[in-house]
Length: 308
Ligand code: DON
Image (cartoon, rainbow, N blue to C red; front, side, top):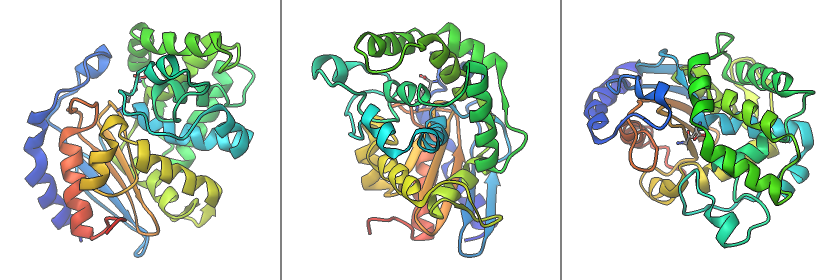
């Protein structure tokens, strides 16, 4: 695999954007051009980054933020506390569903990647107020993506906050059932901000490379997270990273991954590769339409399906 092969895969899969639509429930995301596709692959063996297409375009991290925030919550509170608060089961429901908590009387959100579980995860981040919590998240994202230019996209943040009533209902439902602490409005502000951070496919590939490399940043050999937390997060990515499309994705692509409605996809292939993909048009589950196809071809080309 080299940049040229990767570029051929981008060209081959570009038109799949026509099978999706950009997210429109967050107005600022609806303005993004769907005609973009890019991929960055960090190869742990050669310690090289391969790139093709729109890899350095900034886009909203959205639900992919749930990965670094979960890692930071584990650093802040420990594995035991985090998973006493949030379960690790796949849901079979949409990412913003309340169904399992309400109908099945679950005492905890189902997993850290559905919105309810992600909001509960954010509530565990240390900091005296929403501002300090968000600043800690931002500086952790900069470190783990090896990207000092990551910033809050204020327009997206305002758009998230303005249209975030389903997230508010999930958060207040959890508070009303003593599933999360009292500071709901601060937690929601922090959650909306963590989703509105501008990243690139290159930075996401580096984050995924840390997960793939058992918690050590391959570009400087420094440990950023524990090996155990890297293993746990990759496992939850496998069972719940693409919500109610996780099973199909696992069968057809076969690697731990996490999506975001900004059009991002990250894939962490243990001991081999960290991959970041960007293409904003989404399928009906809220996952990047062309991104999934490109990732599938890339994993095949790399012969990196972990279940084969
Ligand atoms: O909270 C939300 O609904 C969005 N900020 C993030 C959702 C998301 O990215 C789902 N992923 N595919």
